[in-house]
Length: 145
Image (cartoon, rainbow, N blue to C red; front, side, top):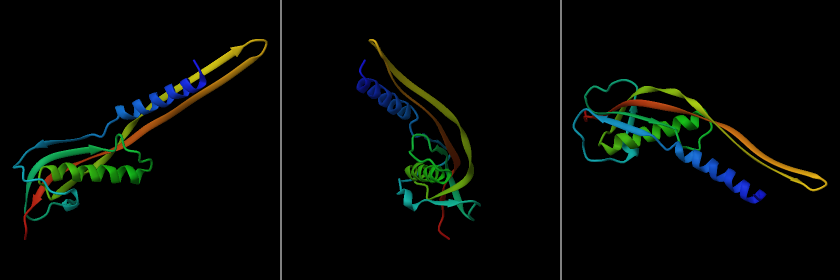
């Protein structure tokens, strides 16, 4: 197998393993769903507002994102929570918190040896760990005061 082909196999395996960790958001409907809103219309609340109704329990993670910093992963989680809440017509999220997810290690390597009075070796290897954040909350509709 040629070096170019082995590099292509390595790249393909890297891409496939990244796709296996697709974005994850989910919800459990617990109230009355309203017409969808834009994610930009959804506010994050740390404490319950005075008057609201519950719509769904939501959770999301940074899986599948290209964020590498803790803050970048947190931003992805918040954005995905807002998107999930907005799908159900929620204009707020009663934020419950985040957790760090365990990492997944991926190792890929390949090599070539050619011998004919001389030895020629080429090796390519890689290892990386995917870690993430996940968060959850209650998608709510906050009544106008």
